[in-house]
Image 1 (cartoon, helix red, strand yellow):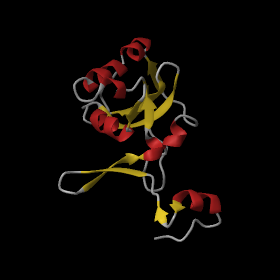
Image 2: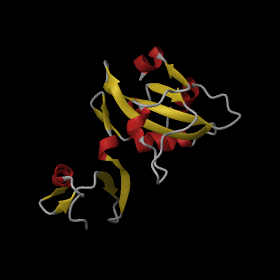
Image 3: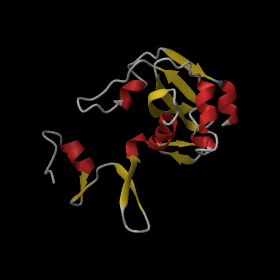
Image 4: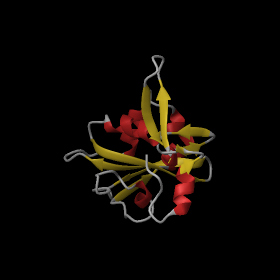
Length: 156
């Protein structure tokens, strides 16, 4: 295990507490005692009083034949406290609309987990390891096309 963050005592104190390394990972254990990574604690958001784990919603949306990739972040929402904003890369040749993705979610995940806003983008900002830099999605990129459907917000 690491001893500390290089020249960052604040981050060290947030991560290592009472000798334990707090990774920020969320996991579940099955009946046989196996652990499964669910998501990162910092990615979870609360919508209408319910915890939403973006990885679960992303997994469902990636099953849509028109979705190349997707990343979901929690955004402030007047009605729900926070809501999901899905950034979607379409597969080439697909004319995918926000309503198509919401319809696809029906019966697969609970209604409160459906994204309330969907932006179609050409690419994601990524780390050197290829992971999506979600913090930059809401503050540093311009979506190619954004669909915010007030009817979807009310229905969800």
